[in-house]
Image (cartoon, rainbow, N blue to C red; front, side, top):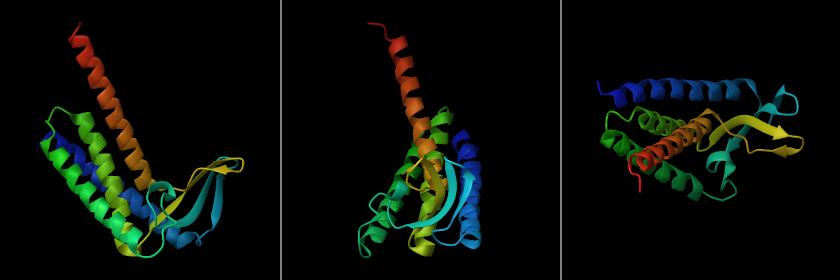
Length: 166
């Protein structure tokens, strides 16, 4: 089995299980717009629904357009990520991890959009009265995956610079 597939499969299975299980638990145990303090002054569990993108971006758009837009965009992104993973050389394990995390997060939120026509968010990070927009495990996977890819790019640039002195 290629290394990139050996990375993708467990990330996909574990990430989707964690994402969907956490959302189902929130749906079952916390009323909509309800909150439970976890770390006073920093973190709540807060059950909210998001019709927009990650962190509530574009959630204020009306009608069905946002749902169709985000469904189409996510499907396109999943296709591009699948292609990038497929074309990735097998020695690029860290890049495969980054792509796998992003793909898993996108798929987790797509499942919500198909099932509920919106995404369940529940992680509420705040400081005093300043709140970061609520997010979920899938959003976290996308952000961590993007950070991994940035690290890969920076690392590869430094390696390229070191091997090509002027």
